[in-house]
Image (cartoon, rainbow, N blue to C red; front, top):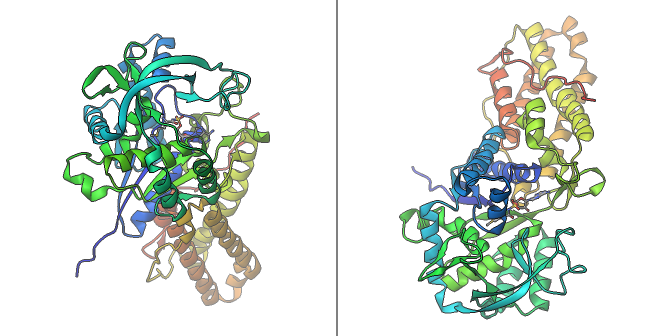
Amino acid sequence: MTSQKNKYYLTTSIPYANAKPHLGHAMEFIQADTLARWHRQLGDEVYFQIGTDEHGQKLFEAAEKAGAELLSFVNEMSESFVQLARDLNVDYDAFVRTTDEHHKKGAQALWRACEKDIYKGTYTGLYCVACELFYTSKDAVEGMCPVHPNRALEELAIESYFLKLSPYQDKLIDLIENDEYRVFPDLRKNEILSFLRNNKLEDLSISRPKSQLAWGVEVPGDDTHVMYVWFDALANYITGVGYPDEPEFNKWWPADLHIVGKDINRFHSVYWPVMLMSAGVTLPKALYVHGFINAPGGVKMSKSLGNAIGPDEILERYGADALRYYLLRYIPHDSDGEFGLERFHTVYTADLVNNLGNLVQRVASMTVKYCDGKFEPIVEVRKPKLTGLGDAGFDDELQAIWKQLDSLNEAIDKSEPWKLAKTDLTATTKLLDNWISEIIQLSVSLTAFMPFTAEKIHRIFSDGRVDMRSGMLFPRIEKED
Ligand code: MSP
């Protein structure tokens, strides 16, 4: 009998290739990878796509500042995201680059498909280069960008193509309200619904004259314009799976989930669905919007403030699973969270070295000591339940797993097997068998979150014999001054 697998297509946003990755990018990769791995464990056929956003003013400026040729600059930056994914053990299926020919052609096809809602006009507005976005005077904070307080908004009048949004406004409200396009958590859904209910959508400027910026995808039929970087970038979700005419497209699209941060919610819950409706393409099923990682005290992390921590230094010292664990457990899935080295170190020692690591270590060594390393292998390994992951509840699920680890540690302390072994070896063996079986079950649940650790636990307890050759799960690490 063959069973039909469910397909599951999920994406992260595609970070700008204008600088090296930071912790926020790492978190998004890790969240998505956890969901991808969980769906694979459930037996779904998964397609997991990441990539880099390589056009636009911001990119152009960054390359110029670095004194680099554009394409070699984006190649290098894009490669640093590939490397980050590798270092984090992110098991993606596809990496889209918006400078790829295939992507550019697909973005042009999408433009053509939207043509009945596109017209040429003049745009005058206040522009922030860092956001790649026009703001209204209502948004501006004393002439400065609301997101980048040290960047003055520039007044610009440009010839531009526009996409009509308002014909789709009511339909969009309906779709989001009824979760046909499910935006979650609720806070983000409500934010977007109240924006849509209280504002008439203005037409979106979707091109730039080449004279102003040539680094982009050419507008089909007009070689004097390139696409606005967001039109080009959003298209990656469909071009990556073969839009417009590869058979793969029908297999994978619509996406089951897009994962993005709160600052780009509107692009994904308003502009993207309108582009798709205009083009007659089915909407994605869901959008998960995560919060931001801040420095301790809730301050924004930024290079210029000197409080930004790169993923590299943490990965080198503590390894991928430790970072995965921290970001998934201690950055709340539905709001902002904080990251500081001090707290990270404390968590590493308490939760990983002293709790999980020590549990595995002592159960394994007692089995070696009292049972000659042998145990009764468990017959059936259950699939992980983790139903909270349907709402991206990484933090809640990990908390529940750690509660079980606490109980196991307590049960061991209470039954004092080191004493029992002196009088009743059969009872001790039974206890150890049970604990090993529980640890194996827990490691199945941990697989999606911490794949290296889960694999190591499996190696230690496989085939009825303890194998401790792969060493400790989490070495004790001295705190750095
Ligand atoms: N290029 C666009 C996305 C285009 S998607 C079609 C972009 N790039 S970005 O590099 O600025 O951001 C990439 C992702 O990182 C976004 O989801 C963003 O919200 C997220 N983060 C950026 N800073 C962050 C934190 N400090 N914390 C958590 N995530 C953050 O936007």
